[in-house]
Length: 228
Image (cartoon, rainbow, N blue to C red; front, side):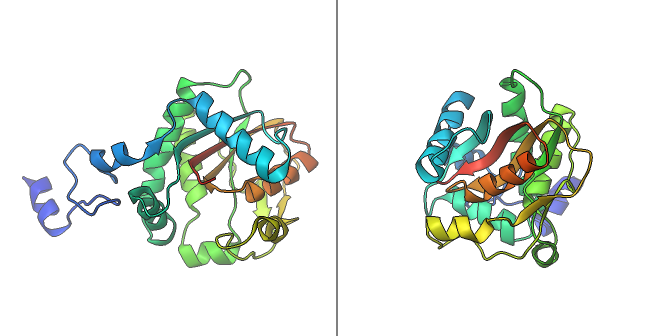
């Protein structure tokens, strides 16, 4: 009865379509989830992410394994959900997708385990503006599923960068060049790097380079959406 009263005054709605969520569904309704272009398996996601790195950055050795849930399509409901997560204060959407990513990785574990999970950092001013880093939310939920440590302070964004959206590939690469740094002496050999969306791979590659320069030998990637 209490849940019914709460639903009346504080309705739980889908972040994709705005409809009321059934009691056993959270953040995104089943209809919207089924409309998203999900990769059929982890192998397909890994292959697609390698194609993005090869096409845009002319290299694929930056990571040894990668996972992604969905392909991006402009103006679909997934774009609405991601926008709400990043800019609308709905951090619970990140928790929801983080659990899905964690389940995907658990079902397709790497040959060698990673030592910790590292989210792509926001600049401190941007984090104040948004109140949270959605990649940290994702990483924490993945860590809970996999029982892995999440190190939110291993990598920092040294300078404030312009949004990548709307920039050319060359501008994207220049925008994040030397923007990240590892600020810990305790560096693991293997890391799972987590971001919400990967488009050209420029930001991801910049973080990977900072990790490798600090002594990380192997990097794996996980993202909600591949927007190639």
